[in-house]
Image (cartoon, rainbow, N blue to C red):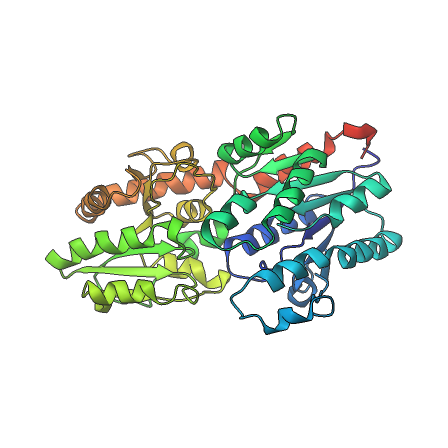
Length: 410
């Protein structure tokens, strides 16, 4: 190390992750940056809308992700329907020289020791810059993006995206992966990759029940809560079907679904209407991060109902937030969840995708308030002692400071 002060350029070139957003990627980015800045690091951020969001007295500086337009090169793109991804993918790829120019400008004014980049589908600018200036490049991988995009949405420039992923995995100096399953995905492609597993975390005090008092539902219904994206692999349909089976027999159940439902096409609401439970289900839509803890306190039980998947690579952010909230948890026994939660100690774990086992676990907790309390208390202690963002940042900084590959000394 040159000195005790580490100068980090944090780069997120994913135009779909605004720095101030409400989804998991935005939260992860802000929490890691905040922890870096509190740990004797000078941090500069480049991300979508980063300087627009920058809080007062943030302790770090920020630049907005540069814009890029593909229409000047391929004018026909402006006539494509909005849902067609070719235009946005081209623009993400064409943004590379603009990002590299911005990196050069920042570096000339304020030299940084390392580029820490959140992996995105089409960005090579961070790696190119690091090779030019002979400084380390760290790649944080949160998902197998090419595989995910291929399986769940149309990926127009799939060959380019795959070529970018291959190069990043081979040429970066170190990879931070959020789960063991994701590490296996990376090392299957690049056996020599140096990978450190650093799961998601939580700011426990933000979610602690002692700071938040439930008041919005204001009734004595047994409330089941879900937080997160309503994408197919999060199991919301499984939860709705299981809830319907309970609500059919008992009138004292409510379901609270916290998360952005704008891009679902309305299927969750339609499913509830078809099952005649829409009067017992509340959809909050997207919620500001600061308001989520109070909503979680409305629930008696919090659920992560993931379906069965061959490659469950997630580090489920909601699991850590549920734990910090001090609420009883019912979660699918799959992937990293199985190692974070312990059945009948910090949660009830159920068979992935099984509506019957999910229903039985929820009914068991409804009938046993003492069990709910014990599970919630133990989970919160685990979150505070083992799963904070500060602990995650320490592990990342340790990996950065140990970097000696390519004769770097930072």
